[in-house]
Amino acid sequence: QVQLVESGGGVVQPGGSLRLSCAASGFTFNSYGMNWVRQAPGKGLEWVAFTRYDGSSKYHADSVKGRFTISRDNSKNTLYLQMNSLRAEDTAVYYCAKDSNNYGIDYWGQGTLVTVSS
Amino acid sequence: QTVVTQEPSFSVSPGGTVTLTCGLSSGSVSASHYPSWHQQTPGQAPRTLIYSTSTRSSGVPDRFSGSILGNKAALTIAGAQADDESDYYCELFMGSGIWVFGGGTKLTVL
Image 1 (cartoon, rainbow over the protein chains, first blue to last red):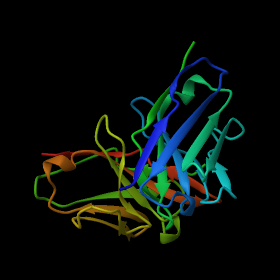
Image 2 (tube, rainbow over the protein chains, first blue to last red):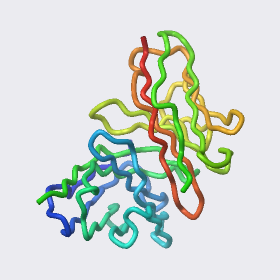
Image 3 (cartoon, rainbow over the protein chains, first blue to last red):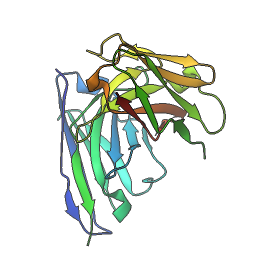
């Protein structure tokens, strides 16, 4: 069965950096696009970034463009989100989500909490 | 900037049928927006119900269905059950690799 396990969350000061990881199993990782989606406390879902199955194309939401970078290592079945210049408004649970390859997410991880605070 | 709109809240009686909608602040939703629907209960990760307008995700019962109704995407839940009480989020493809979520609908079953 599809499993997505996020890690790397924690408390970081404003202006700091953090790298999230998502370990994937139960499917052929190098055949599927992958997403990061976040949810601030008590708020709705916000799409953050997408990478194609081979990493050849990457897209980021305007709110994180230039600060966050999505990447993947298909040899390790792992998705990453490098987050730099973190702000208080980046505080959220970050979810890794598998693309269906038919336009749309079909599986989600359990999420990892990132708190940006001094 | 185009906003994805959803009803903030909705209620349905047990056993009843409810249709939640997903629109755009400017323009119409079509199949080329590949609408998805995700269900989330408090404290849990989201679960995908529908993607690409009407494709049910694995394990989702057929009482959940997706469609385009007029100028909006729609999620219909038939035979509502107590554990359908959740937040429901639609998601639209806006082109150029960009996706946008709606603000969510809080569904109450009572």
